[in-house]
Length: 218
Image (cartoon, rainbow, N blue to C red; front, top):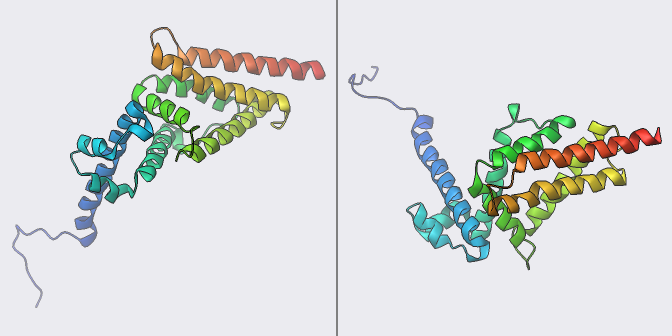
């Protein structure tokens, strides 16, 4: 005989029942990452404490370790979280190519001006990473290396030059230096420092210079 249930009884599949705890876990991890971003941005990695982060999200020091394992792993998760947020802004999660990528760098500067807290955290941690055996040192080394290569590749496409050309490689380093270094000036004086306009000015000048060199050799 088939089992019948009162109309008020709601049968919830196992997968659905498990979804709520999983959702709560994801939300809690996101809250921890946002709190860690604020603490590391204000105090740096070495001075920022897990206790303070835990207090911001209303949990214990042990609770933070339950989700991330260690302070070092939490730091790396914070940096990865920032990159994921940037990727979410791209259409179809696909990065533009060539001149469109150079325009994307300008748009990134515009977006950065809307989230000072994240910019501050990134700036503090990237500067701090050059000291000793900082746990984010490899992350930033790889990030800058990859970014220089990416900018060189798209500069080469935009200008019609081999991306391995020394002029292009040097130009890529200059663009990365401006996009990252300008953030410090902006954080200290946001009223008088216009990041998007300055980034565009530098990129346009570099592209024009490379094109003039290419035309002169033809």
